[in-house]
Image 1 (tube, rainbow, N blue to C red):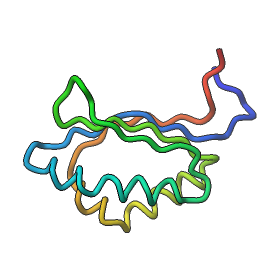
Image 2 (cartoon, rainbow, N blue to C red):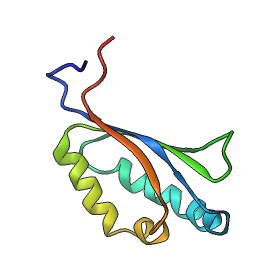
Image 3 (cartoon, rainbow, N blue to C red):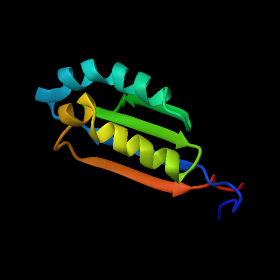
Length: 101
C-alpha cells in the first residue's frame, strides 16, 4: 500500500556490467551521478558497487514526481553515460510513492 498523496518516483535495482566494460563504466559514473544530482527534481541518486556480485552496480533513485523522472530519462539518453552503458541489461523496479509502514 502507498500513500496516495506521495507522488515521488522511486527506482531501485541494479546493472550487471561485463568485466571488459567495468573500467569505462566506473570512470563515467561520477559524472553521471553529478549531473543527475544537479537535475531539478532529483531528491536522491545513489549508485554503489555490490559487495557480493562482481560488476553489479546497485542503484537507488528518488525524484519529486513523474515529470522530473521523465526529464532525467531524457537527459540520460543524450549523455555519455547512455553510450558507455548501451546494451548492458538493467534490472530496475519503479514505483510511485513511499510504502506505508
